[in-house]
Figure 1 (spheres, helix red, strand yellow):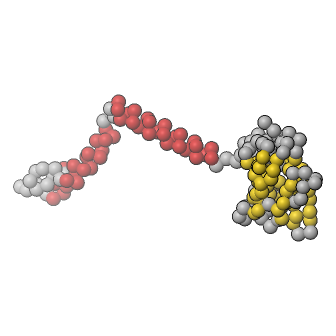
Figure 2 (cartoon, one colour; figure 1 turned 90 degrees about the vertical axis):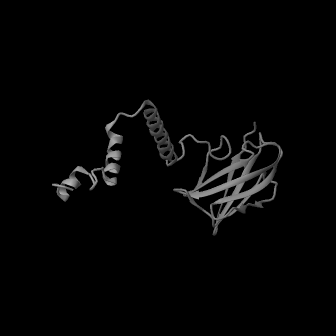
Figure 3 (cartoon, helix red, strand yellow; figure 1 turned 135 degrees about the horizontal axis):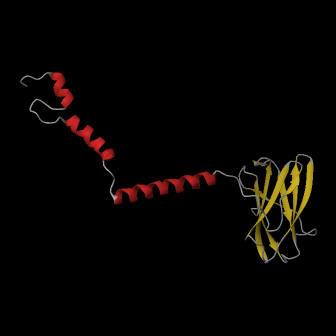
Length: 177
């Protein structure tokens, strides 16, 4: 340390023995990443990484959107029906009703997508059949029941909704393959 001050050592980044200090070396190694042009492999990697994150971001944004305007809801070919401010959708399992036992889901919601879970929902396949109470599937406004379908081309699902003293019957025609 002959003839040098402490400040000049810190400025040059050298220790007492004339070598670069560890802090100076780490600092310069970080800066050197930005001072040299990346190799072709690094450029490809960075480009691929940017493309990946752009794709993930676009999928995340797309999943935040609402349903498509022309999305099929309920029984194929049958639009949802309204009872006051209550929207009623009927879905079948399998999607297209076939001869035999089919499960029917009655989805009852208020606008905008608030479930109606305090209703009594009954369904039947014809006027002569007895009403069968649908089983509530949690407090999400979905009611389920399996019924025998004999002729999906001509039959319809009759849905009876009861809320307090109010009652309504809705008809949802089935569509065959």
